[in-house]
Length: 344
Image (cartoon, rainbow, N blue to C red; front, side, top):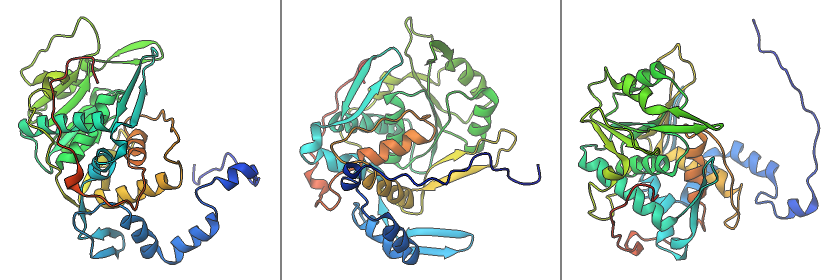
């Protein structure tokens, strides 16, 4: 095919109900859009000002086509905006996540619990030798443990890449080899449409030739639990209990530093990677949350953990009164306690 063929066309203009229009967070979209186009640096700077930066940027945008850098000189940690500032306020015991399994089991996680678990995973990664800039692969189904791992990497400054838990051995091995991952998070199985899919077997085959992988953290969901076949493997909950030294250090990341990356869905190409930097990703996703959902609403999402879920986690855990003063000194001390299997 020599050109792109348009399969659908939509020209209708749908007028929203008056009640919906009155409660919309954006009252004049056209004016806001025009402002963003005419003064993009002022527009995005205003959004960024509402977030927490340990060091403020000195340049909003450095654009040398095709290269561009946003909020140059700024330093922050995305988890401070998503977690710490909530725990320092009355939202500490507010529900951050509601996770429902295919069987109907429901797990409720507060901001306080979420921060504790993220700190435990981050501390365990640090004990395992993971440092800022190291790469971590997350090959997990839709579970809260996958969310803990993503946020923990961001807190530590490690670069993570989430691989959709439906990809096979070759796709996973390619990603492992491309990023030279130090740690792999996975699960023994995933449940899809009533079927049980063995993920651990895929991981075993994929890492068999990857000697650079030092640790494989396995969320064992089935009973009886699968036996480990390598000294590199460790149970997810045993891994959490490696370190109970308290709140983990929040690694400050330059705005232009890579937060995570993902590979574009082109199995034949091993070079199609998309990198997301810390500053603009945070500002972009917070902006969408700010004008999409209010603090009292519950947002439902059913995306693959490989992309959409990360955005949902950051954007809607970070949604709060943006201009509220915040100090790291306000965060209560955190006492981390051992966690047993089956207790998110």
